[in-house]
Length: 131
Image 1 (cartoon, rainbow, N blue to C red):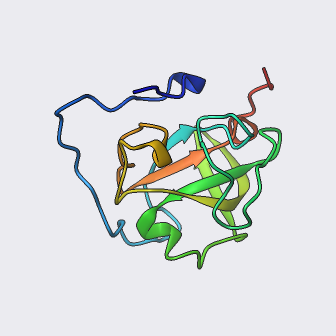
Image 2 (cartoon, helix red, strand yellow):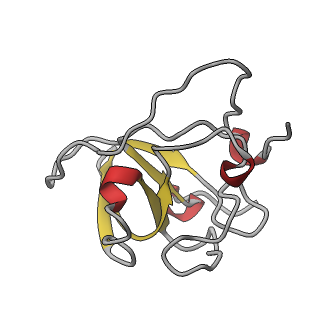
């Protein structure tokens, strides 16, 4: 099976069982999360267009995908979240879900299910220049 090579995306291992989640930790202004990098552009490691609007998004814009529980059946679509890390903060718009319930298939670009505490962000959130 092929995997998307963008941003060193993790590939599923044959025969390995992966934990799945339907919920995420409760949200507060200080909820801890794992911040990962993702491409939201066509051909990027996100695979398909964003769930919120069916579109691809420039990695130059601060956008994120949230774990299934935090995505909350699309109720957080187009809402702004504040990400704080290393003494900085940035606002980003929610445009997609990082699926915590399924993975390791073509639809998920052969990547494992997301943990339940992921904020998958574009390079703009990290202040990274575009490649």
